[in-house]
Image (cartoon, rainbow, N blue to C red; front, side):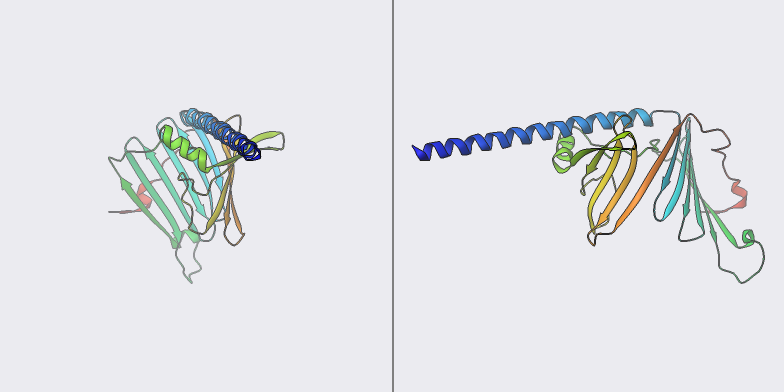
Length: 230
């Protein structure tokens, strides 16, 4: 009799655990689907500005209609990269200061090169999507591997997504965890925190504005000032 009672209790506990697991997974599945849809809607806009800041790079992205311009400044060097994509053509302009003992102006030592790629299929999504999936099973797998909590920071509610196996990011092999703060209302990433095995962290922050990009912002550099590379 006691044995049957023990098995009954264990069976009930197991059933409760299974139900909780299903409920929590379903919650994450719904949240991920909702955030993915919100980011897709944001990326469908025709006028977007994104500012990105990492420990190594500060960048700006401008999107106006079918033209996208990205400006990247590398903090540990005097290197600047400008990428302009329009239609099926993507042009990359690089500027870097060559070492010189001359006392001339900085412009005289700047190496400028341009790379032109035509007939290319361009990605028009300028807003990062931390929860992008490919169908039901992909979303289910993502839900199983992710831990999602909520935080209120300066009157704004965020989902905090933790998943060190997130395929939407290029993560280093010594990554121990990735925490992504996503605004509940908009689906926009506010902050990414990369946590390494030695306990150190790297943070990336994002800022956004919409319908503020002008024609001047997406102006193309004068390619005659650059050495075009084959």
